[in-house]
Length: 210
Image 1 (cartoon, rainbow, N blue to C red):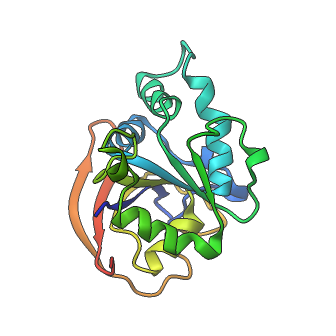
Image 2: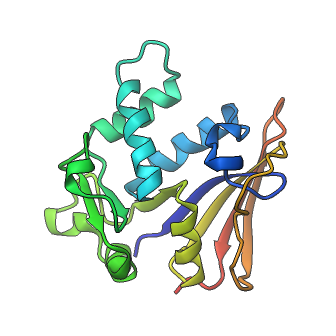
């Protein structure tokens, strides 16, 4: 069974974005990029909400041939360009909205999301192709951003692990990361810090994962 893994930057005051949904308010330094590369390298599928997916479509295609992009960004962009499968949970996104990654993107409506994510988690699309697809059996299903999606999945026992990067900035956002969730125990698996950075990475397993 594959793991559903959340990777999220959280400000010291508990937000995943600044006021008005400004993600650039977050302290995204080099450790943030390093963690993103590690998570993408372990992933066989990406899972997004509609708003985050639209943002990814705007940013990543331009990084493939951008000479000024960092090596970390070029690696992540190459995974998208190489056909890494993507599932988007949205009631508003349509096929006409997808300007890139058409063949690798699957849209799932919210009412069907839990069942579809359980299927992906337990089966793995790569099993039927002899493991040859990018969505190989056993590789993580990775969620970047998409706070509304991952908090819903966490509440319903559909998140296995969380990589939470605690950034050293007060951003005064609009919605705290865990707002509205009932008590859920997390087991600390690892703590990581970097020289010359105030960012701390906390790696947890969700005790309610089913």
